[in-house]
Amino acid sequence: MTQQTFIKLLSPVQDKMYRMALRLLVSREAAQDAVQEVMLKLWSRKDGLAQYDNLEAFAITVTKNHCLDQLKLKQNNNLRIVHSNYEDHRPSLERQVEVRDELSRVEKIMESLPDQQKIIIQLRDIENYEYDEIAKVTGMKETAIRVNLSRARKKIREELLKKHRYGLETS
Image 1 (tube, rainbow, N blue to C red):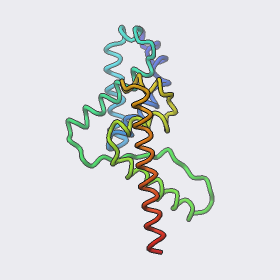
Image 2: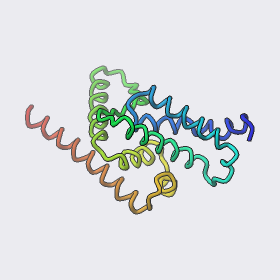
Image 3: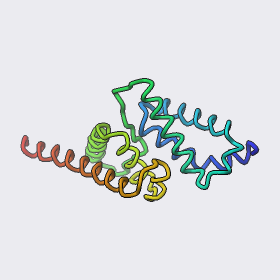
Image 4: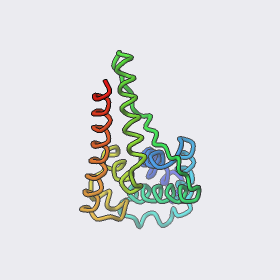
């Protein structure tokens, strides 16, 4: 495989790889490094890439595994999920602050989720992957994916409601 073919095949997937890495790692820099390392791994296996039916799913899986390996190596307990792709175009500064606070609450709740649920939420709700694609990436059965996704969403919903109820009681 030539370098041009490799770039043509993996360029469209690189953003998704980055977002997956960002969801799992501490910082943008760590996510960028992870994607670069995964691209090098894939390049070193360039001649075997043609055997994969879904190269995108394979690249995302390699990225996920690499990030989880990095987390295990560092024993990093202060993980942060940074979702900086969100932009609020409404003119109200107060509304922007409210949205930013709410997003921060959701990120903190997501930090407490098990890694598997974080990955599933990322792939399904942010990347808009189908269940069969998530199954290929995670190696899980679709029913297990649905259960984990449901539990993750329920946890997020419950924690947000708890926070809102608490805010109403103290007002």
